[in-house]
Length: 332
Ligand SMILES: NC(=O)c1ccc[n+]([C@@H]2O[C@H](COP(=O)([O-])OP(=O)(O)OC[C@H]3O[C@@H](n4cnc5c(N)ncnc54)[C@H](OP(=O)(O)O)[C@@H]3O)[C@@H](O)[C@H]2O)c1
Image 1 (cartoon, protein in one colour):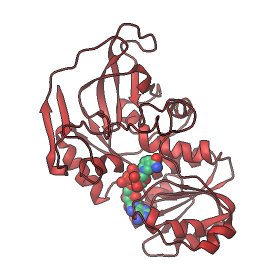
Image 2: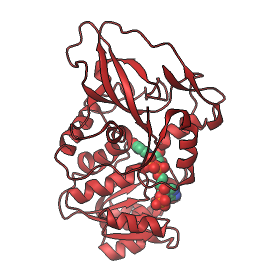
Image 3: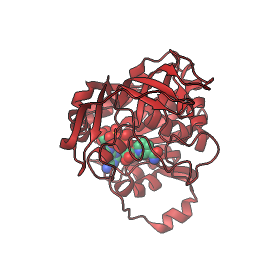
Image 4: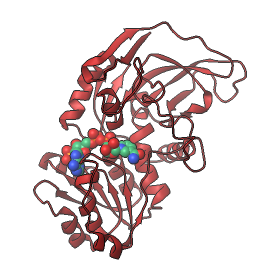
């Protein structure tokens, strides 16, 4: 079977596409044939060596495929069931803990960049019945993060205002979801072309964060203060994210695209009295709730483009270029 593997010291040029023997099923496990994957910044961090991993690790947290064999004693899944991976294979329900979030697919355990895997049946969730494998492969990390931020943390309702930054995988899904839930969406981008696309996807107001360095203050002025702010830039965006928020609003730190260290105005930080809840993806039960919702929603994930598995390094280079809007996928 065709498999991608990270050889250490890791960098994008050390991703190897190789043939490996198909693994055999054991009692209590299932065999999955992966059909599609999607790229996340975290996958890039592992594949590029920014985050350490083991020699030979199979990358990619997000995969969608079908069950092709069921081990003795497994009753939850049947052959032909359409499934997707979990970002944290051990976090099934309840609160996050050190134990249930210490293993991550494609990082500390093998991921989905292979034609066939043997896995614990609890490490999968069903996919929306109206989704293709490629569409479903966009959900495990980026979409679940957007879902958790808006629905599970912020408890968003129609009429609320939301600020969503940039046009990457998490942010585009968050724009679509927030619109579907009746929110007024404020968005940012560094590109005039992408600003237009964001408006077409339902963003009500879009500000260029590159030409307007005080974009958070601008958005506060336009909105009167945002109810729910999703921060994806970290170091370069946190201060403006706080500026945009209303007093007693929600701020959900999600990403670090702008760096790991932030300078923030502590007076504003205290006087705004925000509810600040950093998150890391979500649990299997949150993923299942999202799947139930998506089966009734009238939007689908935005897929920028698709590559084949042997082009995985090329796909990461494209992600790094920042040209994409939405998700970059791999078809197997
Ligand atoms: N906490 C979690 O659970 C979780 C889950 C998934 C992802 N993340 C993190 O969230 C971030 C976004 O992930 P992603 O997969 O959506 O990434 P992505 O698809 O690579 O997003 C890239 C886009 O983000 C925007 N961007 C880049 N640098 C920015 C900056 N300094 N300020 C504002 N926007 C910036 C750009 O949009 P424009 O081109 O429109 O300017 C860029 O096209 C990453 O840091 C990732 O690690 C966290």
